[in-house]
Length: 166
Image (cartoon, rainbow, N blue to C red; front, side, top):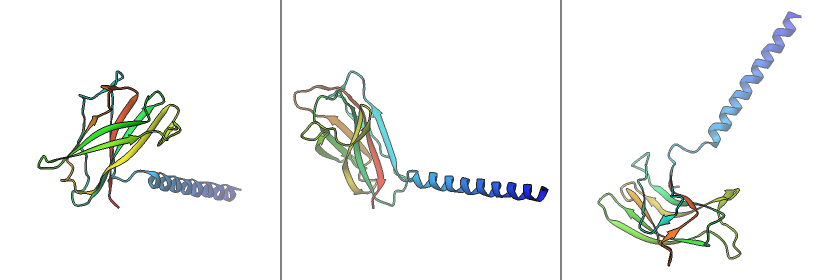
């Protein structure tokens, strides 16, 4: 009887170890790579003014490889427009500025929000730099540039996502 109990306990121990190994493998397989970085800034409840630039300083884990940078916008259901006009300045290591105008489409022609989301919050992103070295983009400055609109409301967060180029 004791031998049967010992065998059952040993089998249970093996099963627990196997479950633990599977769980660790699953969790590490689903995690983001150490080289990826995202940083978001929350905008004021009263809205995003044209005179209020948002500045990001991308963090790179390895200066010897190239990266892609995406700009992400989070907005809620109460956002009044189908797009968001932006000016994005990419500043390099010697302070040269590359200025880009972006017409960020947030909904389709039928008024359906693009991107992903849950509840009343949506996120969309657009690539703003590809295959760049860290010295090519040392900071990203984003300006709200909507026509005839000094303050844009219901944009919740804005962020940059930096990933190694493939």
